[in-house]
Image 1 (cartoon, helix red, strand yellow):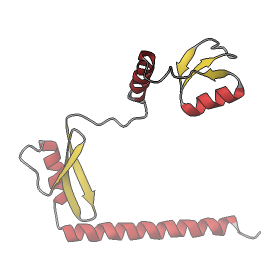
Image 2 (cartoon, rainbow, N blue to C red):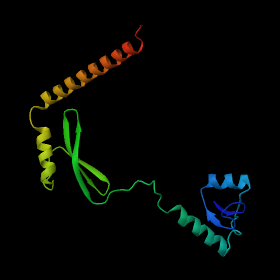
Image 3 (cartoon, one colour):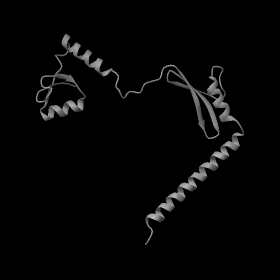
Image 4 (tube, rainbow, N blue to C red):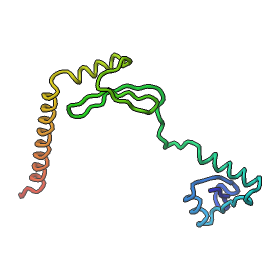
Length: 149
C-alpha cells in the first residue's frame, strides 16, 4: 500500500508499507492513501511495475536455500543413512557413494559398527530408563510440593 504521511514526524513523505499498517495509519488520520493513476495510462503501468518490484524483493525472514553440496548422516532407530544435499535438494544413501568425504564415511562406519539389533535394543533400554527416571522425578516433585507439615 502506498501512503502519504500527513500528521506524523514523516509528514509529506510517500512510501510503500504493509497493507495492515497503512490502513491503521489512514484510519488514525496520520496518513492518506495514494491512489493509482487512471488504468491503462503510462503512469498506471509505471505504478504497477513499482508494485511488482516491491513484491518480489527478498524478505529478511525468507528461507535461504543453501547453494553447493553438504554431507551428513540421517539417523533413526536402527537405521543410518548418508544425506547429501545439493542446492537445497536432499538425497539419501544406504551405503556411502564414491564421492562421500572421508570424515562422513568414517561417521557412517562408526554409526553402523556392531550389531544393529543390539544397538536398537540398547537404545530402547536407555529410553525406557529415562522414562522411568522422568516419572520418578515428577512423582517425587509432587510429594515434596504437597507434603503435610
